[in-house]
Image (cartoon, rainbow, N blue to C red):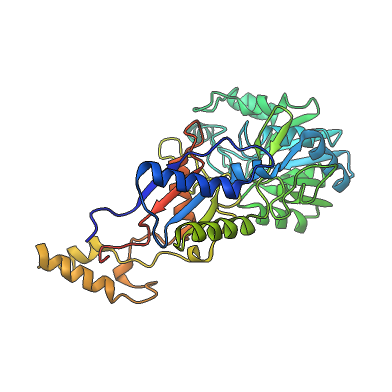
Amino acid sequence: MRATGTLARGIRIPIIKQGDDLVEIVVDSLLNAAKKDGFDFNDRDVVGITEAVVARAQGNYATVGQISGDIRRKIKGDTIGVVFPILSRNRFSLLLKGIAGAAEKVVLMLSYPSDEVGNPIIDMDMLDEKGINPFSDNFTEEQWRSLFGSYKHPFTGIDYVEFYKQLGKNISVVFSNDPKYILQYTDNVIACDIHTRKRTKRILKASGASVVLGLDDILTAPFEGSGYNEHYGLLGSNKATEDSVKLFPRDCSAFVREVAKRLKEATSKNIEVMVYGDGAFKDPAGGIWELADPTVSPAYTDGLIGTPNELKLKYLVDSRFANLQGRELEEALKAEILKKEGNLVGSMDSQGTTPRRITDLLGSLCDLVSGSGDKGTPVVLIQGYFNNFAM
């Protein structure tokens, strides 16, 4: 029996620039790492490549001016309502600049006590102290300030109300968790939430909004030479310079298939490949979700489709095999694994296992291994993930 289970290695590659042959670079870097560090490849290894280097190699960028231009051709009104953005200098500041450049007036509606991914705009205890009901109470900025004054994000130290307002002289701020509240100011609305965007757009349209867009409806095609993403638009974008953003990558399915093909040619192994963005996990101290991208993985090879089908060993040890120990216990567990059904959904023997997509689990692991700073390992090799106690 193996002495180790899942192993994850961050793989260093050269700094990627627009136009680089990323497929060749990824494959060569993996082969070089295996030679230098003395490991072999196996069937069902998994290679993850961060979306950032895929988009960079593609040159998938857009300027603030290009964002403004695409919005102007889709919204003709003088006032635009912007609802439920996340609180992020990296993720939203330049998008708001682009929106502000497309209208005479922008009414920015912030959710409270936090944004969609958990960034606080006010402490929940402060709402309780004031007797405020976040499900029904709405505020202008003046009312908000009179109640709470200035509140700074506990991690960044930023007062996001003030920070967002200074991005355009035409920006005003209101506070509500009801999408319909923005219609008191304008019927042209951009829904900036990520994972709840379909509901928000549905409610606004049903409530009489004239034009409703999501961030996923902006730059779905090139505008004056810009990058674009036909599926996600501006969702998943990151600040690149003081005047441009890097968009979520395009054509990822063709990319992962080509990497898998080249690895098969070089190693004779069937290696799964995925592109990954943010992991799907929550910080226990700050209560902030990592997942600001629209999906953990925009593309992956077929072997990564599905969810884990695993037995809960702890449950079996403490219940069905409580009278066994040592070698006898190990053999009983192995036998149970080998005879498990193809789908354990609803079975008590799988209770407590994680009912998440394999790509979400692997993408989270990749994101933790590569990090978002200066590790310099935007490629991750995962080995042994599909092994179990009986293998």
